Image (cartoon, rainbow, N blue to C red; front, side, top):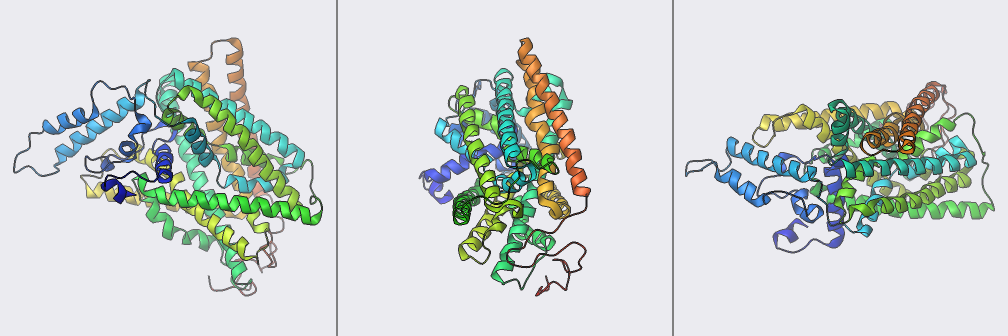
Amino acid sequence: MLAAREQGQDNPRMLHNFIEFLYLYGHFAGEDLEEEEDEDLGTPTIDEEQGPLLEGADTDEPESQLIHRSVASLKPSERTPLMSRSMSQSMSQSHASIRRRRRQSVGSHGDATVTQAVLMLLKSFVGTGVLFLGKAFYNGGMLFSTVVLVVIALVSLWSFLLLVHAKFAVSGSFGDIGGALYGNWMRQLILASIVISQLGFVSAYLIFVAENLQAFILAVSKCKHLVSTTTLIFAQLVLFIPLSLVRNLAKLSTTALVADAFILVGLVYLFSMEANVILERGGVADIKWFNEKDFPLLIGTAVFSFEGVGLVIPITDAMREPRKFPKVLTGVMLFLVVLFGGAGALAYAAFGSSINTVVLKNLPQDSKPVQSVQFLYSLAILLSTPLQLFPALRILETALFVKSGKTSLRVKWTKNLFRLFVVLGCVVVSIFGAKDLDKFVSFVGSCACVPLCFVYPAMLHYKAVAKTRFQKGSDIALMVFGMAAAVYTSIQTIKLMAAPSGPSEPLGNCTPPQPGSGNGPDSPFWPGAGLF
């Protein structure tokens, strides 16, 4: 791709679309998260490569003239270094000024079509959440889960639209809008919530990959080798750490393309297998219409699945006609209701009370196609994890580091060590959450995602747009609903996490360990366990 660009050739259209998709994470929640050290005159960044996405930015002076004037003002001589500290700082300030003016321009927009916006939204929403919905339906019951999922989807859509209308009224990022309307404390609160939610996603992804790889290794070794989830979580660092140090998102375009291809293949195969199970049985498995014990877990998982508020503003900015985005978003959300609702109901109907948190583990583990899908889906999520981590890293780095690492090797390596520390923090959290993945996912959704999805957009719309009594009343109602849902579901999830665990989930065709039996997956007496 880079070679083609150097030779003056266009990128393949598919890769071009994926770079546009990665642009969204470089401007997550509308924030400018690109690093200054990547933005020199010789190395284009996603922002420069994807200029059409932001064509029409209303600036008083062409960017090339701004950069030329800032460099020319340094008056270099033959003895002047090619890149002095002052030149680097001046160029960084010029780029920062350009980006700030571009982002805050009310009239700025991109050239993404409606079709491209639809594809970007689908890529943003479809990931691991769809695989957790089968267990979520078990936790809530078939009827209750169906109703709640539709309600959560509609409330999420309503909230996203409130944020879009607030964006139309007040330019800037999610945090900028909050800061303009309520003060800096609101901006910091929004950014903190984004960081917490993204780190929660990363931790959940690490657990997901570890559990799938555990089942995969058990299957291919015919139950002779059981690797603990803790070991597999640490093993992911071999790939995760190098990818987390990547600062130019364009370099992740290939991994993002591969990951989405694997996810698509995995979902198609999973749905076909679930339908086949129901047909062969001649009906659905044992199901409940309502599960009075575990239903709070459903709410958090549903919010986790529909969480995508961080990409609402960048996709709006990327569109050629931003005013069409509400209709585009509405259509996509209605499709996702069918997709997610169908996925959860189909999985629960196929496997009933025996369903695993990750439904892939319910498929025949001795099947080679199942093993292939399990491995490829795990690899896809592992390759997607750095993309989820990127916004949190950049928000934290922007808050903690003033200087760029372009002119200071010490600053650059300090940032690298900081990234390593954050990654290890996610690993520690995932190890503690691995015991009950479904409860951990629900907790992330309840505690971190609910305020972002429901409370903050309503607060912004209330102050920026709401004029009538109905608008103000509905905004207040959404705020109260969001806060009540966050508090109630978080408390209930914590109680369920603290309760004694029931029987362990089946490990494919292998005998599942029982709590307190001394013969569990971490026991050296596990039948055929290798030294892992």
